[in-house]
Length: 586
Image 1: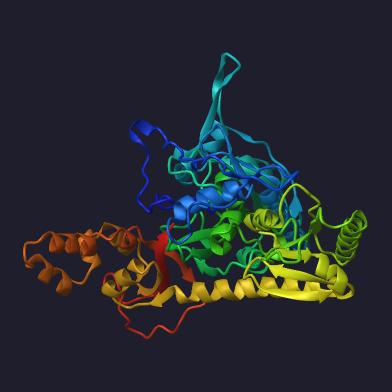
Image 2: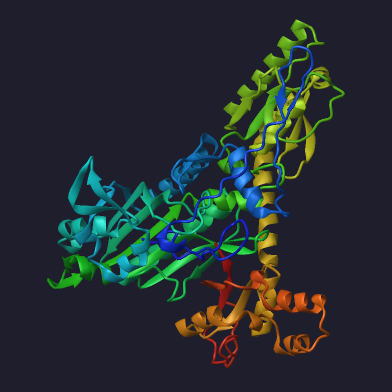
């Protein structure tokens, strides 16, 4: 089945330039973030030297470097010896766990069961469905040796599992009583990408779930496609606070061998690119005919089954980081955060309070032992109350770092809420709450924290989504002409345009030369400008803006604006059949 890894534009995160395979079929060498020498500052008496925390790249100034840094410095990933493969550290894997647990519970409510199929595929089985295999052929990794001995036949490592599972579906399904068959597996797959690897977004090995279901009728299959698609929308919008657009893929962009493909599409305003978030496919009867999946109907006739496949990957985490992160680090929505609140004790009441959601008691050498113990005991008591209220909380008891260093540490890791507890708070019976997403602060009495914090986390979740939704919507421009289409792309926006829905017109968008990225009326006068370096640079800038190149259909939105009869296609001028969402993409 198709994952969001499939059919991605060859564009790097770092610079937006097309990324092709290196000559001779060698993959591009992965660019790892530069490891700056840690800067240290001398702490006070008895304190260890503290490593300064933070990012050297800004999100707006250099998005690619910022992203490469933030996923490493926040301890979400570590780079591995094999290019394109990454170690998912606990902070990121905990997010995947939350997604997995939520989604798994809901597909089980629909009647889906979990199973597991082997990693390896024989060559003859892989080649069963020609169109399907051709779509994955460049990405298939092969095992050719066992120790020092050559294998008689090479064995493929699954890029997806249709050809692994369907021969056995054909054995298991004999009658209409065996249907529906609805299986899902949580697993890894390998796709040997030749494009620029990008953590979470494009990798050679990634984690996902893939559902493969079989029905007696097309109506049942259609119903499930959209049920799953809406669950994917909810993963992004309700868990990750990331807005998406539900839509149908064009015939050119659909999954190889499918009848039709639906997807949820996210968008990263900072880079001006769309991201295919997840896909839900109706395979029709194509695969059942190839693999002989037939059943006897109630009328005693033989019929090929209708099939679906659908998948969601760890790409979700990358989209979340890109959407919410800032120059301080990642910003994690409370519902998927491994730690929702960090409690930090503060030794000096004059210390400037900052933001984070972590409860951390900070002992002060100036305080007496009894006062320090009372502060730590109170921090533990607050944490216990929050845990009892269902909040994931930790207390930072480290006494060899300053409060400011701890604030930076937890902000970099995106903990939603920081709870500060200082000497004055101890005297007043309150704690200071600081939000990671917007820096907002408020004090709260100890006895009210267990009720107030869960509400504040939910408020934070809602406001993060509302902010991201407003940005997403502001990046969609409704256009009707080619010139307006290109202008929208140059502004790093998506374009919603009337389209005749043909593969030829979609190819035409990619084939048009760079000079057509600007109106002819604007381009011609530039050709006759005075012969100066400034005028030459202006022609180059306007005629070959890379932000305007590499566009494709993201989806045909399920929610369609009115389309008056006779509205021309913005590409060909032929009568438009639908509104399509276009943009540059990862």
